[in-house]
Length: 159
Length: 159
Image 1 (cartoon, each protein chain N blue to C red):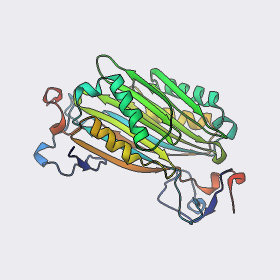
Image 2: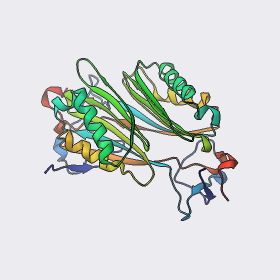
Image 3: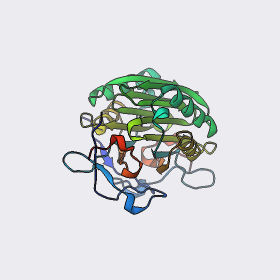
């Protein structure tokens, strides 16, 4: 039976059940702790029904949001629900953009996960907010991939 | 047609550019504030390299995680990076599961977004943790889609 330690995260990373001496984190050349990525969860309100309910429009806007943020698009897939709503994801070299729309509420749930310095997830969120003719956007960013040294294969640790 | 009651006030949602007095939230028939969905961001550590680096294994495990959680799979797409790593997403009727793997770090960044009462995103996260032979999982849940009344089209309001 698998034994797991279930721990909570938050900025900065809090690890319960880990010995403090094991809490070395992966550091870059400048000796600063480096999360692997940034994940923005965005609530986009007051959007136009006819945009959020059109799979082709949503798909085009999402792909363009990735490009607008400087990402490299690898794959994308979208699905239209009945009677309304679209879900879809754009996989990028730097991670992904995902969306779920509730046209009847004028609401889109978006998340944008990016790795590296080149792509800013907020650029994508702001672009989507504009393209959906939204009145409001509320978002928060979470750091992803702050890896405790104790669980990293030794060869991967840069100390 | 979705029937919503708009009642009540308040936090915890932070809306930029919103007056506090407009912070009415959508409530269900039991008069409890109802987010549209739950979004779990999971950091899965200490995974097996050979699983995280195999696109077919990752794809199968992700689709099965969706099914294990009781979701209905609609679409999926996965991408293999060189020299290592897999990214992919399973679109479900209830939203999505996404993954990005760093096999060399034994790390998978997962997020599971579910709507409705039927699917529990934590079931999928626990299933993935087990299938990746992970040693640790750290995760947090965010409520999605708590919609301020001021931005909901009147046609959707049932008062």
